[in-house]
Each structure stands twice: as structure tokens, then as C-alpha cells.
Length: 445
Image 1 (cartoon, rainbow, N blue to C red):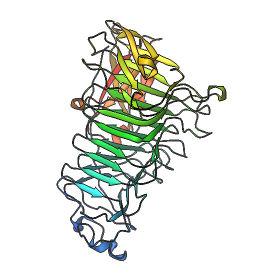
Image 2: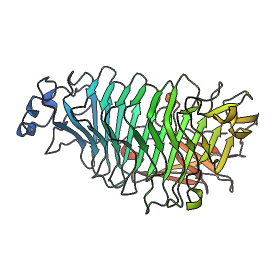
Image 3: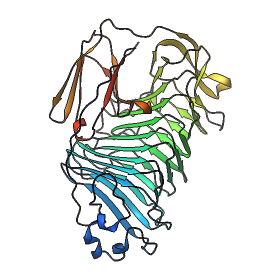
Image 4: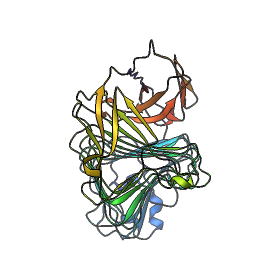
């Protein structure tokens, strides 16, 4: 396997405010959310909101909207607790029409409690944005308590991200769902944990599949989804090329737990896919635990497509079996098998009835030298508007996985495409959001 890492460059623009809600109008690092002078003055038109933020007397019906207008870059840093009471009803974060980007950092000592209503909403790019150049990103190193979550819902095209960082905590307490799906059929939702913790109450679902949705676990993340069913198949009838991707990187002390897993891709999603990826370190990889069933195929008679499996053995020096899914905590069963299994830097056999049918594991592992395409290099990196076009000296019919990250130290990579062939890929809208970015290219065995 060869990896190629390339930095990009920033685009800086300015923030603007919204007319109807309590909107942030500060900008740049070092400005705190709690300073009322950093918010629009028109909040005085809304009873009680004039005392916000920072007042324990604020009412429990407050809706806070933080928005970046079209063509702008807005960065918000929250350093302290907003309030010790449950004063917020809804918390909305929207980038404007592209090119526009908004990044909100909940720093290590920050705390937001938004539980004034049972189904208090955290929404990221819900409605409004209409291109892939509209990006809203929430980085959580502090604490956020919310009723339910919606990412890129009913919005045409934008990218929405939630990153839980080491020490961060996201707790979902209400009766709604964690929605990473879109009735409009375009857009990208990314949920990433490189540490910290996530918890969910109630009887809910993590809904994926109707646009390009990703869930990534690495570091010492604790994902307690005992009340959350992973649904990777929720494409609508008109959604024909949508992907769900769930990845686990490394074997650091982490917990990944779901109530049940529905991992297939819908029959209507004819050119789409659902993929589970495991990237090993020298000690293996953390399994995904579930208290219920692991269903990989759905209704095959109706045309549902089984999930795919990708296992990267590059950094795993051993031959011991690797448990990938663990059902021992509950009474669930495994249904179906993966449609495609791809192994990088090794071979092996997937055992769907491992340990008496309570686990899925990779057995009979034999390490190989890994792919080493002759003379493979990235030959050009060019800018086209807000897009980046990468080309390489493809040795077709080989296929490649193209991945990207903002931080090499985080060891967390986001897949751009699972089958990048013909030696070219266009990363659309990326120059509207990031000051630097790295890419790596991996050939598939």
C-alpha cells in the first residue's frame, strides 16, 4: 500500500447575521458565545431573549440559530457553560448557500443543555443550503445535551459534520431520532468520534442511506447506542446512488454498541451501497457490539442488497482471529452475508457463526506484502473553482480507495470513493471549507 499526502490552502471570507433568531455575529478566535454583544441586537424583539446568553432567568422556549450567510466563513468558539439551567429549546446551525462554511467549537470547559422540550432539536443544515459548497461543522470537546439530532435533512446538497473529540460528550435524551437522511437526496452527513462519549436514551434509530452518510469511530471513543438501531438502508424511491459507510479504526479502549444493526442497502438504491470498514492497528480492531440482530441482507427477495465489508490488515502483524461484530451481550442473530469482502494486505475467511453464532470474525488470516503497484504516483493536483482535481498514473483495471483527512495526528480518514478508477477524482467544493487537507490513495487487492 502506498499513501500520498497533499496539503491544500485556505479561503477566508466574513460573517453576517440573520434577522429572526438569536444569531452570533462575532467572528474569529477568542470571542465567546456568552458575551451578548456578540449577538444580533434584534433579539430584543423576542420576549426574554434579550437576557440571553448567560442569564439563569432566560425562559425555556428559546430557539438559538447560528448561521453563516452565503459566501462566508464563520468560526464560533464556545469556552464556558451557557447556563446551568435547561433553557434552550432548539439549537440550529446552518451554513448559507455555497460557497459558505461554518465551524463551531465547543471547547473543553463548555456546556450546553438544551432540554427545555422533550424533543429539543440540534439541527445542522436542515433546509436552505443548496450546494455541496455549503459546509457546517460542529466540533465537541465540551458537553452538549440535546433531545434529537438532524443532519442535512430536507436540504439540497450541503455537507454536515459532527466531530466528538477526546474529552467531549454528546448526550441525546429526547424521543426523536438521530437523522442522517435527506428527503431531497443530495448532501453528505458525517459523524465522527476520535474520543469522548455519546449516549442515547429512548427507543430510537440512527437513520442513514438516503444521501452519502458516514459514521467513523477511532481513538478511545465510547459510543453507547444501546437504545439506538443502526439503519443503513433508508433511501427513498428516487434515491439510486447513495452510500452508507461505517468505519472502525484501531483497537484503542473504545466501546461501540448498538441496539441492533440493519446494514443492508435498499432495493431502490440501485447504484448505492452500504459498507462496513475495519482498519486494524498492531493489536487488531475493536468489534461493533450489538444487543440485537445483525442483518446484512434485508429482504433479498425484494431486491435489497447485502452490505459490503472492507478490512485493512496493513498494521496488524499477527494471525489471531479478529472479531468484527459481537452479539454476546444480547440474544440477537446474524442474518445474511456480506455481498463483497475486500481485504488489504492479507487474506482470510469471514466466519458468520463464530463462537457459537454469537460473533462474526475474520479467521485464517495470512498477511501479504500488500499492494505495490509499479510506479504509482499522483501526477497532478489542480484547482477548478472551489473543486480539487486529483489525477494519478492509473494501472487500470486496478481500483483504489481515495481518502482524506484534516489532521494526520487524528488517524481518522474519510472515504471519498471506494472505487476510484481511471486515474482521476474531483473533490467538489472542498476549497470553501478547509485551510489544509491531506489525501491518500490505496489500491484494493
